[in-house]
Length: 127
Image (cartoon, rainbow, N blue to C red; front, side, top):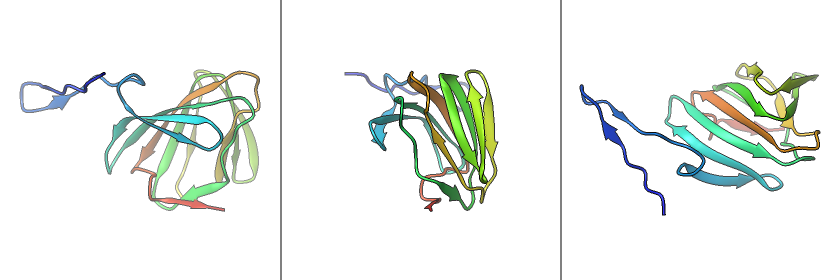
């Protein structure tokens, strides 16, 4: 069993090393995985994995802006009606109120970070 052990730094700052091994895990869509690396009201960082042939529903967020950073694989994004291909070590920014979705049309797993400011959970409108 893994335990999260926060460390108190000088000045009263708390820090913690987080990975997919010890972060809160959830599943979504068709066998996709997510791990909350940082979860606060003002900032969310999630690492996600999408198997080949999976995708999410078109949606938008009223308040959250998001940056998707591809760790490995190739992501296909629909953003405001246009299609974008994002490769490993590239990112795409999605402003608030922008209709978007991500899919994995490649033959390998897609691994990426989604960084939301403020958090996107509770701020999603599916279309």
